[in-house]
Length: 366
Image (cartoon, rainbow, N blue to C red):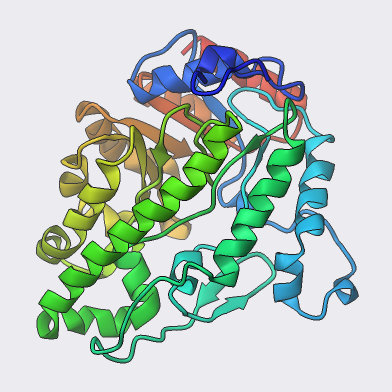
């Protein structure tokens, strides 16, 4: 890796496993600003691919699923096997991001995590707002994430990027601690308590983010998490999946201020817009500062295909924001016909390297 400490740029980042890494990072950087160098960025991945099991390790190796998740050697070995058996075309990057599931931040406050095969979830523990709520800086989960990060950094140089975990502060964190159904009632019964906890958790989140960001920056890593879209500054993926259950007025009063404080601390943000329920708050989300892009997740079943969401995607583009769009290869041609390319990052599954090369050639003619 040719970058010097404190001077990492897209043009100085090199990987043996991805010889065109610098060019790909430059396309992503241009995309953040709704610009195109030679073509829109394309990431070859299936939607929710990060939740897929990628090998068939003998389960008797571990006493339980938690032991498998906490097995650092296994997690890194599994990634390395994947690293050396694929070619990273387009804006697909080799990235190891320490992962214990999407409710990891709630677990740092004492919420028990239940581990499944490909994800984990938290059990609510906040029975009353009279209970003390404090992050445990000695949490086994924080310790494991830091240990995983350090081990990956020891071997990543010139081979792959190391990212940070999937942190969900704000309203999603409180819903994990309190339970979504109960939290919906709390807006009327405990509004001041909710606002106070939102301020507290945002401050804690920024401290945790800074801790891991500093660790990664010391090793000259770009900023990247589960979405697989790196940037050389401080990149965050804000979200509020819980917003599908609340009105725009509740969102504006309770969720928006915490989101604001998250995003202003970052140089770049990609908002994870999870489905049409959250999309009812799009106008407020577009008012958040420092949000460069929206990841549109259209859902499944009747929420597919992507073409029905063209008006929403155009609305995001008209607001001066970039868009991450998941679709099938069959949808690519009609999508190209319907949407302007500026600010679009495509996420596409593929069957072969030949198909990926053909897609890149077609997108270059958009």
